[in-house]
Amino acid sequence: MKLINYLIIFSILVINVAFSKEKPPFKNILLLDKPKIYKQIIFQDRNGNKIDLNSINTDELYILNFWATWCAPCKDEMPSLDKLHAKDGIFIFPINMEEKNLKNTDKFYKDLNIKNLNIYFDDGLKLVKVFALRGVPTTIILNKNKEMIARISGSIDFDDEKFVSWIDSIK
Image (tube, one colour):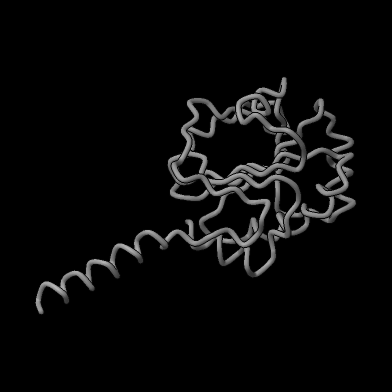
């Protein structure tokens, strides 16, 4: 009888561990089975200063959102990304993939009433190559160790309750 009880408890624990990783709420989110490590994640702020993500020491989830001013889906999702930025435990870097043009990017933010997000640039499209991006918007989610744990291809409502609940579960 003890053996049967032990096996039942063991089975329940194994099943719970196997399914404890909450599934993403939308089909365009790819959750990696094993985090992917990148040696260099470098981009620029609006003043041309290099940002090396690996030199930032915080215990947060990192979201790199790649966008362009001409991209209609980027316009749709940017206001919800702006709202997500207010959540604790998440650091967001919206990275423009175009040649640096502050006039265009500032107008894009002003037209959409983006108040909380800074503007970053991928000089020479180096991160586009690193992450093998195939279109915009694309969002890369990194854990606190700066390892990629998920990728979102296409637009998403970052303010959707299902997404917010999911992102809280992976922090």
